[in-house]
Image (cartoon, rainbow, N blue to C red; front, top):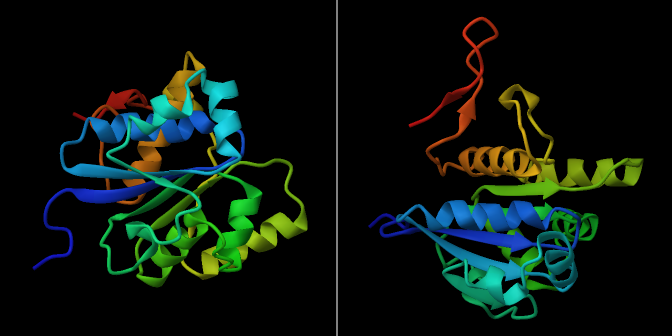
Length: 202
């Protein structure tokens, strides 16, 4: 029996770096996919940024997920490798969370789930949100990459001719999902300079 029989379980973590809109957009996109089940963890730091940056309450964001856990619940299902998932996205990923992942310092559910994702060989994608970066940040990214994490800073693609901030967030969120194998209809794709870039998947 394949461990992914039934809906694909995706862990989504929102941490305290600026960029809560990425996590919420990923949840929205997954809600449109009947074969994806989202498991959400919101860090303590993210509880403030969600409200200030998105205008949504933590309760409203939580209702967008299929299953929600407390970041303090180290006994949650997603803290064990025996609980099959399709992977995990941390959006955004704070430097504190990056450090925890890089050093396997599992003192909260976000980092514990990320560590489990790595040890089981499942995709872990970190939307690291910080600039400028000093050498310590870069070392942490290198360490996390050596353990198998995908470092995915939310760098906008301007070939899509975004008209709004929402356009930028949407494209990055779709591409992040695709990087771990979850495709969404409507992604704007590069199609070459001559043919034009605004080609959407159907």
